[in-house]
Length: 209
Image: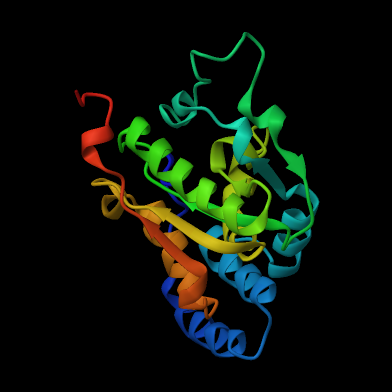
């Protein structure tokens, strides 16, 4: 989701023609390959290296491992967690394509409203599939010891999820990383049926009565 880090600078002008050609090639390639090409231009990393790096570090988080306070801050553990109980420790290594939903959200939006919107979606998912969903959430699934490289392959992580799940609070459209995630999904030829937008109810927010 839209964290507090600034994205890498855009590619130099001389790369624009290469970028255009790359998008043409994407139409004839798989989603993971397309995402790796996008990573090459957004993050300045070779597309083959981007794919390999993402495959070796891809993780998923069971919904039940989340708590409401986990959505409160991008870089700080929830105060309701015991000392040493990092959210990332609850994520598991999985193969690309094994995660049900990539959660795209803005950290500045109300954490209570976001969590409750996601909870309703998760309950619906469980009713339909008979199991809880496996999520990709930046705070839990990015390698905290190598954040820069993890962000460079973000498009490949997105390609490894069945669905793009947008929690569209008031701040969402103001966060560049959120827009990049949506842009990547569309550039990969994302099927609209795999895009889900949740609208948090502000009346459920932290300051609601």
